[in-house]
Length: 298
Image 1: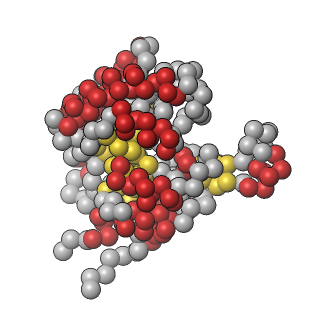
Image 2: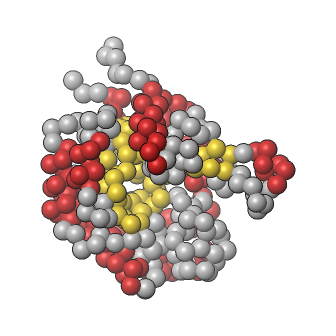
């Protein structure tokens, strides 16, 4: 019997840049994760992705775990050596996604560094129109994470897909059906944007979701503002932040989202280091409960 609850799966991200993705998967495959997102930081490091994908699937074995999305995070719009490796990495990920069983590749748009956001649009259109066609030919979707990487409208180094005004501009430049978002509430909350209305408006462009939350310290904002010495927001693992993920997942279901919510760890100020996997498994169980708990056939 199929499990309708798993139309939205709960999983986690898997660091893959150093070639240890299969070993990383094998370590945690029995903890209850239902999906994995192998991801690369700036470069694939010359790895044979077809072979790596096979090894990742071998590590999963006959467990009911999927890989819907692989990640390639860097700046493919500029021309420094590492930027060129990132662009090549995108091409490799698109061409080899099927070896992982994936139908989506996610990451940053890239950005013309230290320029106002709109200055990146011509180069964005040039690069991503070509990559969108390459991906469409292989049945692959492209999803941009909504992370500013400490940038803003005036300046930044990595990504322009970090707020709804930018999304409007981007999707006008690339109206391709297979270009969308890798969305999470955290990256909106850190800029004091309410993430909930976004689901209702933008879910048709959500191709993948990250499990990451935030805690906003409103008392700090009221006393010190957002540019003072006191930290006013923390990125959190789900279950420890401000979001009610029962509401988030309900809205995603109402919008017709089907896919994975893969936890993005390594950011929580408390559940990190030796407590990293404790926090991630708590998030896993919390998100499963927010999804409605165990499926019961009617």
